[in-house]
Length: 348
Ligand code: UDP
Image 1 (cartoon, rainbow, N blue to C red):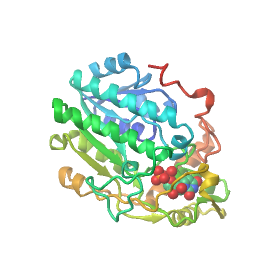
Image 2: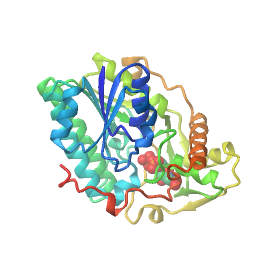
Image 3: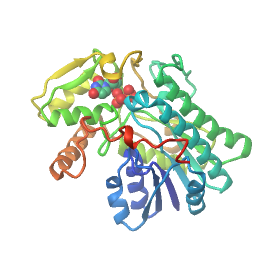
């Protein structure tokens, strides 16, 4: 099969490219490199079964060209990280909405199966013990960037599933819950690469709030396996599925576990939310997925724990620090600066 991966030079997309190439498929990566990095797909490209095109999902002609080649498309291109979304909300929202429309329409017109990658941010601050795909979305006002992002992704889901319902397009939606693993960057706020980077550098780990908020972290190897299984599953068409792990950990416990497993001498520094994200930020207490639907549909199960993810991220960060090829991911390097932001209204 021939797969187009939008955002394929990013964290999740690059692992997906590796999985597909390893099973003998051909892969085309479309990425604007705003947050992704070609280094991430070095192995996939070296296999001879992957190609890279630098471009935007907002560029209809370019998307069409890629879709003409592909049998199926994983649409992963999206702004990443709550911090980035809060700081650059207009750009993130514009690209998310416009990209979803261009990709979904192109996939349908050119007969490409489509998996739209959504997010657990969809559920907003609904802290129910286990969120099913039918759980309510509980959002604050749109003036708070976090909730606008949730709405932009919900628009993408609605378009993808609407095309299936009304036009019989071949679409499926995957909602990713806190995916972690090697190659994830902490530059946009993501907690695990930040903590591991800080621990390796023997700096204090910055726990936001009082650290009692909890998350469920899914190893990227489990997540990408789930994405492929969903894409392969005919019966999944027209439906949204949670992908994540149900084991919950508080952020303070996560910080302690990272320090322990990396044998770091770091301490823990508590940082108020306003200091971390600016005024008016709203945090979530907890977010835990119910993954019964994907398990029943595909037989997928999560197999890796947070300890394995921490070890894998630490090994990756140590190698990266030693090779000095890429910026460290402890959040001190911000690649997405003013100058590198493409204008969503111009780059189409
Ligand atoms: N967080 C933290 N320190 C950091 C980065 C993040 O305590 O240096 C917290 C953040 O406030 C949130 C949790 O870790 O409660 C997960 O943050 P992330 O951005 O990784 O994911 P999301 O908030 O989207 O679940």
